[in-house]
Picture 1: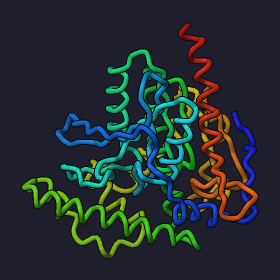
Picture 2 (picture 1 turned 90 degrees about the horizontal axis):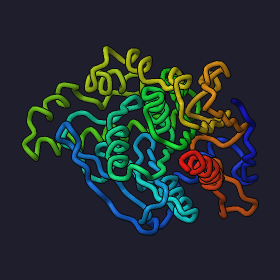
Picture 3 (picture 1 turned 90 degrees about the vertical axis):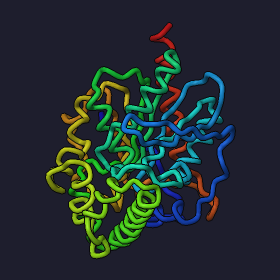
Amino acid sequence: MLTLSTFQPAWWLNNSHLQTMYPALLRNDPEPPEYRRERLMTPDHDYIDIDYCGTGNQPLIMLIHGLTGSSQSGYIKGLQSALHKQGLRSAVLNFRGCSGSSNNRARSYHSGETEDIDFLYQTLRLREPLTPIGAAGFSLGGNVLLKWLGEQEGQLDLFAAVAVSVPLLLGVCATKLDSGFSKFYRINLLKELKAYMHSKLQHLRSTGLTEEAMKIEALGDLSSIRSFWQYDDRVVAKLHGFTDVRDYYRRSSSRQYLKAITVPTLLIQAADDPFMTTEVLPELNELSSHVQLELSPHGGHVGFISGSIPFKPEYWLEQRIPRFFLEYMADSHLSRA
C-alpha cells in the first residue's frame, strides 16, 4: 500500500540538505530515562552492546541505527525518549564497533548483515516469550531490518516494524553519493569509516588478535578510497564473503525482500532524500500486503523536521513512529487475548 505522508517541513529548514544536516550538527539530546547497557557475547566469540531505555514488562522496541551511527545518535536517543513517554521500552542494537569500543573480529557490519539483529531478537524473545516486541531501523539499519524481515518471512513474533530513509537499492545510492552536494555526505562518511577500520586494526593488534588483524592488513592502504563503490569493493566485500561490490549490492539491497515481509511494516521515505533517487522506490506489486510505503515529498535523510519557530524543531518521526506502534500493539493484544 502507498500513502502520502502528512509531514510538513519547517519553513526555516526548507530543503533536503537543511533537513538532513540540522539534526546531525545541532541536535544534542540528553540520555533517555532508565538507561542501561548490556554486553551480549555473540556465537562467534565477539560481542554487541545493547542500550536499553525503560524497565518493567511493557512492550519492547528494538532500534537499529544507521551507517557510522550508534545508540548515541540524536534520532535514536530522541526516539527512545518518545517511546518511553508512551509506555514503551526500547533496546538499541549498537552494530559491532559502534558502541565506543572496537569489536574483537575483523568482520564489522554492513547493509546486509542480519545475524546480529536476529541474535538480539532471539535473546529477547527467549527472555520474554510473551512480551510484544517491535523494531525500527534508520537508513542502513532500516535496510538491515527490512532484509531480515523478508528473510524470516513468517518465523518472527513481532507485532510491527518501521523503517526510515532506507537505501533500498544500494548501488543506486552509492552512485548518488558521487554527485552534486551529496559528495559532502560521502566524504564525511568515508572519513569516519576509515577511522573506524584504523581503530579496529589498532585494537586487534594491541589485544593480540593477530589473525584477525592480518585480515584487515590484507586490505591494504585505504587512504586512496574516494567512493562507496571502492570502499564496499575493497573492504565490505572482502571481509564478509562477497565476490565483489556488485555481488554485495545485489544480495544485500532490501527492496527484493519487501514482498516476503509478513510483519505489519511502515516504510517512511522522502522523495528529496539526498542519499538516493526516486529510482530506489518500489512498485506497488513489490510490496507485500503487510507493508505500507509512506512517501513524503520532503524530509531529507532521517530528517523530517517540522515546527514554525526557528531553532525550535519538532521531530515528526518521534510522533509518527510511536503512533504506528501503539496502533498495531492494540491489534496485537486483541489477537493474543
